[in-house]
Image: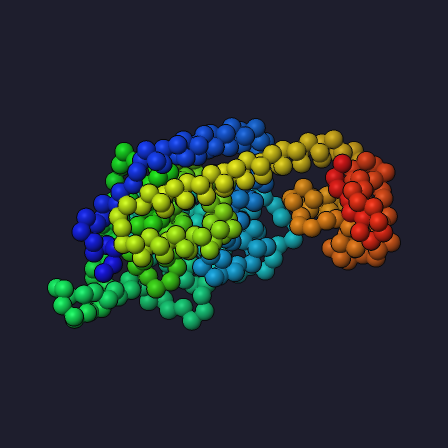
Length: 352
């Protein structure tokens, strides 16, 4: 028996009192993030949006086992934000459609969500897969007939469930839209109308309701990135909700809110780095630097993994070790870098 065949479905329940404290923290974090973004100039705001939207699209796809080319995703998002990029990668129309459908959905976040939207998203997300069929239909669910031992495959029942789900999505409820985002996510996965891509569609629905919660289409945080970081726990709690066949989803909503709070904290930290980076370049705007030095300084600001050593510098810039050491020593002399560890090849450097 599917959970949507349980007595009482589709009336999912949750303990609001238990959730209210975490929900309050999330709402507070959203306000803080909005305040920090208001401090950004137009160019810095675009940079922050470029980073968050690129990560969100990449990680939502990766959670479905689909690896999109990061440079292409970034290029298409930059085009939407009217950011000029010096080096443009070769364009893949499937990735472009993938990016455009997400941007379009978030831009039109106040518009009703329809079956046509769901099928459109499925078609575009599914097109990334190999051996993809253009035929659009719901999967056929194995249904027990009248409590007997007879089972039939039926897609009509799923169609009925989706239509009921659409009506719920588009009805104004006295539910905080943040909670509705989490409920919509799980309810869609309970139905799982397609053989593939249900998770990606559920995350887009969630993003739409989180955008409604913020009441603006600019998304400076990436929930999908946080879900990807905890993908084992994410899949486990979804599977557990399926197996329990319970209509009480308090446990899922609590976990969802904690993940959202972490995503907002990371976004706030990212905006802090962007502001500090801007102040840094303003301070050193008259200092003459070569392209290698600018590239490596920006990598440091973006939180590069590992330590900055002369060998790492040489590998990234495809230059000789001597050139790398000269570049680094020049930045030390200009008080931009300093030596962190001493000891031959293990010497590493950090921004001053």
